[in-house]
Image 1 (cartoon, rainbow, N blue to C red):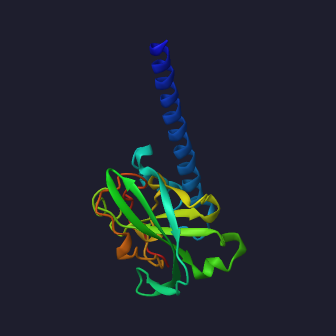
Image 2: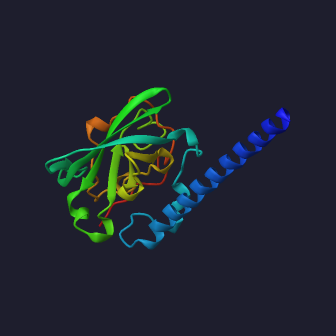
Image 3: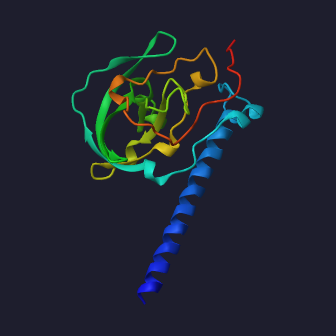
Length: 202
């Protein structure tokens, strides 16, 4: 009976891992198609072959404790082109990843907050030790949704980390991840370096 339970547990864990890989694969296909369908995208269909990703790894999917910040003032987050965009610090999140206690800041865009479609959108830009090696040197982003926060906890999945448009082309105002979200570990999850030729926006 004990052996049967162990076998059942092994099969269940295997199926769960497969389900997760399928979920990430579907997410990435939708991500690629958005480039094709979005008229403001820097990439076309024949560029998609130059997009690369780390293998899905559920170790990089964490449950983070969320501390919503109060009375935060809007500040100007610098962008790659030397201008800035207005954000405010929405929350601090804490979690354990690869044995390390990590704290990061989640941001909310002032402009998007005024749009009913994006009023729940949260922004998590970050840099890590993989930047400039396996991943884009300027850091990566994760999109989160306020509705996914339950009882002060939210899932943060680094397998969904993606490159800013500036990784593919010049001419975009990509926010530069603030120093407070510079991680001292390599996040080998999500999108890797783009291997196509960098484009020039006309």
